[in-house]
Length: 336
Image (cartoon, rainbow, N blue to C red; front, side, top):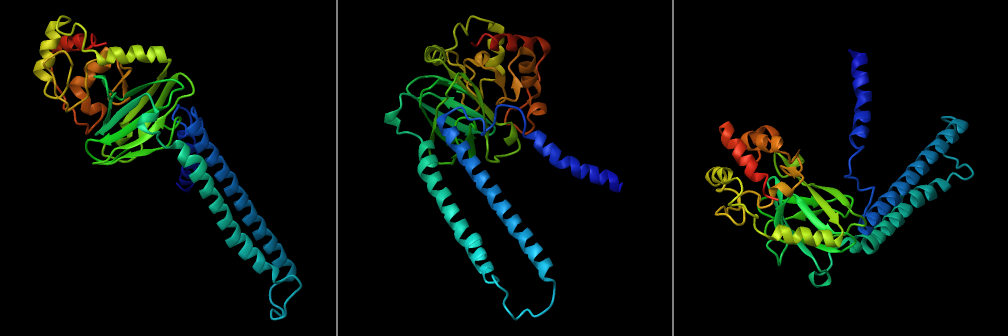
């Protein structure tokens, strides 16, 4: 039993190290100039910390060797040559040097990092995105247009974008590690940050403030596209559901009967804003805030048994007869 306990203790740090590997949610793999500044500050702080640790260990070793050479006991009242230099080491290395280093890091982080990661003025950018945190998903709006989506933020590549964050309930924290720092969504306030992507790609974000049972499954994706592709997406997203009243009419009827009290599909009588806007649901790559892929099979499972996927989320399970479920999924798959 003792040997098993030791093995478990040895496995604990290994599991922590492995848990931090993989994925694209890595603040030390920056994909923007703001994230690069943050990563550089981290490495400077890490290097200085290791230097400080090495210096302390060296001084401890020297003190231990000196103590062994002098032995224990003897006339301790008579000062030995160089004995008072220890005070200079303590004051200089233990007080003065840390104050200088901490002040320097504070100056660098405030002038060269924090200010570069702040959001630009609304008048200084061509695009503003409004993100609203809900338990446990992200509502995404593009002011000046009718475009509304969920858990996906589309931006043009190599373009500064002002992102304003709010909350509909509790405090959340908006964080896309590869693009910028964290920013809190606080009730009654609007905070802002800049998103800038150096390259086309998909960057995973996360709620970084505990907000309830499904906090860990409150993720989002930032999709950086070429400017032309982004404009085409935005135009399509702002339009109502094309042909929604003509395609899969049986499924539309099921939706209006079972789902319209919580969701909106622009172009239909469904106009509730309790849950995510589903006008172009089929164009999204994931469901349930990046918890499961957006496929017909997963969509059907999410509708009928969402609590098994995200226990405690705000969507109730909707038991439907097989035929009605198939009709509903077929209709939702037309919303592109």
